[in-house]
Amino acid sequence: MCNIGVLGAGTWGIALAKLLCDNNHNVTVWSAIEREIENLSHTRTHPNLKEMIIPNAVNFTKNISEACTDMDIVIFAVPSLYVRNTAEKAVPFIDPKTIIVTVAKGIEAHTLFTMSEVIEDVINSNGKIGNYSIVALSGPTHAEEVALSLPTTIVAASDNLQSAKYVQDAVMNDIMRVYTNSDIKGVELSGAFKNIIALASGISTGIGNGDNAKAAIITRGMAEITRLGIAAGCREDTFYGLAGIGDLIVTATSQHSRNNQAGKLIGEGYSTDDATKMVGMVVEGINALPAAMKLIKRYGVEMPITEAVNSIVINKSNPATTMNELMNRDKKSER
Image (cartoon, rainbow, N blue to C red; front, side):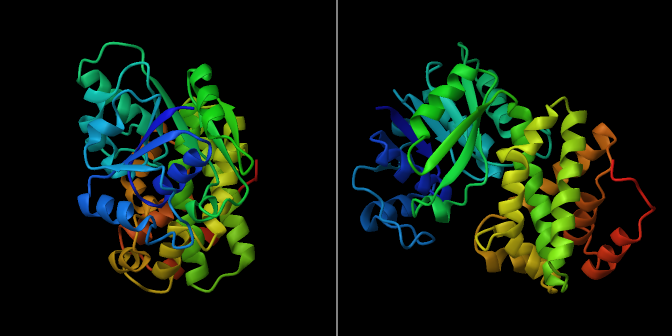
């Protein structure tokens, strides 16, 4: 039995809290939104996970120190844009013996740090002494299915394999199978960039294309992500695993995918702002685009699908015209 703090009360944070509680861990959930904590504590339901009942054993708190102090694991389950701010509040209360887990998928725009690197940067900035272990927990894991106890697989990635195995033991059960991986950078880059490719998949559907185009976007999108990852020093096989192609497939095809939904709306002609409002939750692929464009420039890799999404979402290019330009690029070999 572990003491586990979950920072963030969105769908994934709450689905994880239930799963961990079902594993007989002591779970405390914090959110920066006090009204959210009050509602969840009172109703024991999440508005976007209506079929799931939050176990009474899950504790809720408005005080971040209570979710960080004397914990075996602290999980960052806030959107990527809020990881640094949350870390600045949380790190003073987190002991070096505590394993820090990030489930946010994104790249910080101004530093180009992954989420684990953002947390590490905050730790160093706070002058904290000790060897903190950080684990990225990532894979094809829609909260809506985990909340209903449907079979799911995920990857616990860390430079410290012992910490990854500790998280594996804490999370794994009959419906959640957890694999370990030492390539945390590759796992995190996959998680950030697959959201952009999922936007492309949705945009393609929105302009009227079919499954052939979707399959092409997924396959060639994965080739782009792999090129970038290798250039960044990651292992190629990471991108063929659950956190790579596995997560991309589910995000680019599922009805639960915010990025897929938002992309479809954009393809249908809605503005980026309107599409985001209609989805009603954070669309991480949109947030990842500024950093993605900088990383493409830094590593000098060719990522035409990613650049096309940026052209549509940020530069307001016509989706159909941009798709036609992709189809009419110079002839290439697949390898």
